Length: 130
Ligand code: HEM
Ligand code: HEM
Image 1 (cartoon, rainbow, N blue to C red):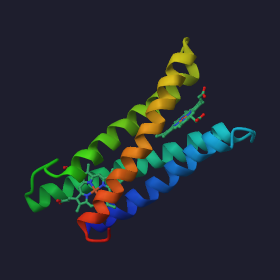
Image 2: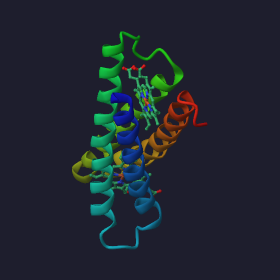
Image 3: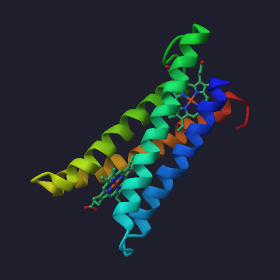
Image 4: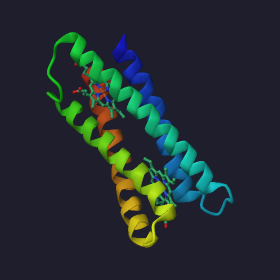
């Protein structure tokens, strides 16, 4: 059951994050792009965290090992990259050297969706969908 919730939360998180990144990439001419980007990606980060907690608890309840499979490790990297990206996004709004933090944010913001899509594909292949 927890793994079904994990899957649903991760799907919802991926949709929010991809929409948020799409807005930053292709919707920059719209006035609301930054608000939309911030809200969609913050919601995505929260859903991703909740999904990660479900997987973590499921591993404990089933007595398996943490980070034992490739999906688990790529998923963990995706979570860490997403936390870093959200932090850099907020920090870059008020940092004195904004351009450096924004450049790092743009790069971690490209890597994190790649890691998320890889984790999603590996997760779906674990249950025989791919
Ligand atoms: C954004 C996508 C995803 C991320 C970031 C992610 C992340 C994780 C992480 C970090 C773990 C390991 C937890 C630990 O070692 O304590 C895990 C476990 C797991 N995930 Fe995912 N996941 C994602 C999508 C999926 C999908 C789509 C499925 C398909 C059902 C799935 C199925 C599983 C399963 C079966 C486990 C092992 C749970 C266990 O052995 O009790 N994941 N995931
Ligand atoms: C995991 C969450 C996030 C991801 C994956 C992400 C990803 C990205 C990407 C890929 C870009 C560059 C778009 C382009 O021009 O190609 C970008 C730009 C930006 N993001 Fe995010 N972002 C996230 C969260 C946030 C948050 C929470 C904020 C603010 C609170 C934020 C603020 C910004 C700003 C200000 C820019 C413009 C940077 C510049 O070009 O100078 N981001 N983001």
